[in-house]
Image (cartoon, rainbow, N blue to C red; front, side, top):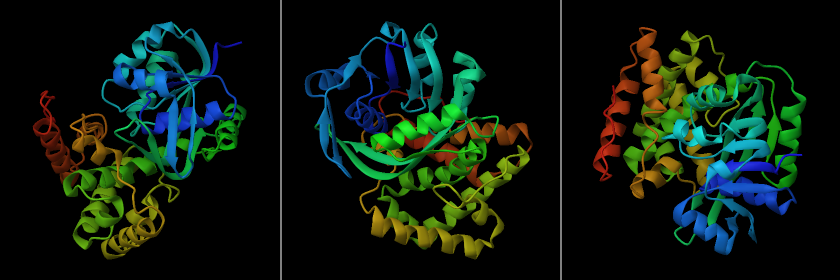
Length: 330
């Protein structure tokens, strides 16, 4: 039997939400955390506010090497430094691994670390914010999707999704996770870029006609990249990627504005994690996400000027809002 049912790497907002719900449901959970966050969990446990409110104790591991085995490893850190964070976990035994990080690079890193047979695809339309006092504000619980990267139905994906869903974090297995991951990524690029540039809550920049136009154009450039990679897009994502790509530009802008109204009604406090990061002077996920997409576009000989421009703008914001320098965008 594994030492833990679940190991969660990263005790930020989403990792804490998942770990707390699983712990409350009676599962054996290890939170891999460091520094002040680890000390807070050891002293106070996990506290969730917002959509639900509770506090639960949790086992905290400060040293990844101390983890011997777990049924599932869930990666919930920010994308910078993921490869280095996975390195000390290579010796541990996991039945399955998955990452709810942004962008497709995560699956490549998990495959390199643990082998393709132990990797599930996953995406999260679930949001929260780590508050200064250590509590987590749970703001959005639409769902986590999991599935086999090779496609098709999977018993292990269904079991994992059912476990998460029963614990209170909505989740579902899907046979087309790769399509859905890229569909989310296409929309996320637009949302992330405008959240950092405008510094506004999500509903506000989605409701602005100029930022809605930029989001629509960014998503449409990302769709060009996805098509070149042979990936079919879907509307089952944060933004309706397939419709945004096939509609006229004015229709695409109207879709974004409509989503802004939906966020205003249902999630007025929602802020992209990228906005939270830039305001806290934490590293932005620009190189592992927009930079990853820009590099793929160059490999394929695609000219995606808005993507290239926002990659450089966000890289500059990342460097100038933090004391530690980061690599320039290429």
